[in-house]
Structures are given as C-alpha cells and as structure tokens.
Length: 300
Image (tube, rainbow, N blue to C red; front, side, top):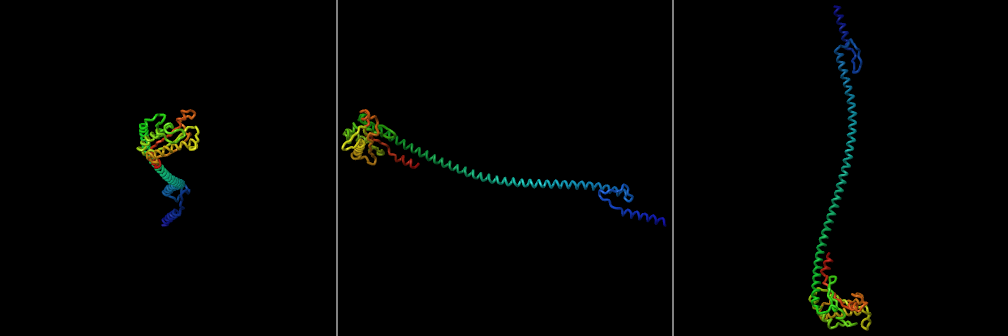
C-alpha cells in the first residue's frame, strides 16, 4: 500500500514538473537534453523554429517589397506628374496649332478671295481691252475708208498743191499756199474753194469725223496793217476755211476747230525757197470721233 502511494506521488510530481516547464520562444536557445521536454515536443519546437525563420525571412522580404513599392509609387507619382505636364503641353500645342490653323485658313481664304478678285478685274480689263481694240479697229477702218474717199475726190489736184495721208490714226489733207492764198492774204482763191467744196462734200457724208484746220507759214516775218505777224496770218487763214465750211457747206460748227501755228511747226527747212514753199500750207486734220473710246476708257 505504501509502495503504490509513493509511485503515485512521483507521477504527480513529474506531471506537475512537466506542466510548469517554461515556454521557448522563436530564436531562444534550449538545452540539448531536457528531461522535462518530450522528444515530440522538441520536434515540434524545431519545426516551429524553422517556421519562425521562414516567417522572419518573409517579413524582411515584405519590408524590402514595401520599400520597393514605395519607390515605385514615387516613380509612378513622378511619371504621372510628367504625363500631366506633357498633356498640358500637348493641349497647349493643340490649341496653338488650332489657332494657327484657323489663322492660316483665314489668310488662305483671304488670298483666295483676293486672287478671285484679281482674276475678275483681269477678265474685265481684257474684255474692256478687246472692246477698245474693236472700236480702234473700226476707227482705223473709217480712217482708211475716208483716206481712200478723199484721194479719189481730190485726184484733180497736183501733188505740190494738195496731198492726203494717214498719220497717227488721222487723215491729213495738206493744201499749199499756192492752191489757197495769195502772199500775205487770208482770202481763199477760186481753185482753193473748189478743193474745199470737194472736201466738204466728203465731210458732209461722214458726220462722225472731227475737223481741225491748222494754218502754217514759213519763217519770213510779216507785219501789215491787218496781221501783226505770221501767227496772226496762220490763224486768219484757218478761220477763213472754217467759215466757208460752215457758211457755204453747212458743216456743223461743233465739228470744227481753227488754229494757227505760224512758222513754229515746219515740215521742211526754211533755208531754201523750196522748203519755205512746203511750210506755207494749211492742214485739215480729220479724226474719227473718240466718244466711244472715251466711254470705254472711263468705264474701265
């Protein structure tokens, strides 16, 4: 009986001793042999220590990863800021490009409008030029026809008495003093009146012709009780022809102009009798009316 009780006490003491054994944390050293720790518990503790090491390693990896994540987040933040800056610059460039494109489009449209206006003006000028050329062609045709008609009408006169030619688009009928006047006189001789009558008949049938009568003299001075100088005489001779045309042949005064140039527009040298004879003349200058041409010029 005593023996059984003793064994029971020993077992209770051992159990109590086992239950009071201190707990070993991760990384804590423990004796190589511990009477109070069973082999199974030691195995479990070794496994736990291995897991603790693995956990510690993972925690260090997590800390490193968290540091890397923090760096990456910083990089992402910087990249996002860079992206925002790029987007702002892009938006600004797009806006500037749109503004420049609009300005370019407006400038291009303006140039296009200006070009169209210039083309329109060129077309109008070309049309006006064509019309003017047609009018001038008609005027030239009238002038040529008038020249031919006068030549045929005045065939009976000598070349030193009367000549007909075209100059500068006008018909010049040049009558010498020999045909028209006595020396120092503005009274028209009978043969001169015959020439003027033939001329008047042609002018009456061609009423769109303006008539300029110019008197000319040589350079030998003249001074009489009637004429102060050659200029006076040349004007008086032109006026005498104008009066015959209006009074005797009913040529409209509005078509006529009388002028005198004295010795100041010679055709030949006044140093010889032959030259002076050529210079003593009266020129009847016939030109088609320029009303249509002037209208075209004013319109353009």
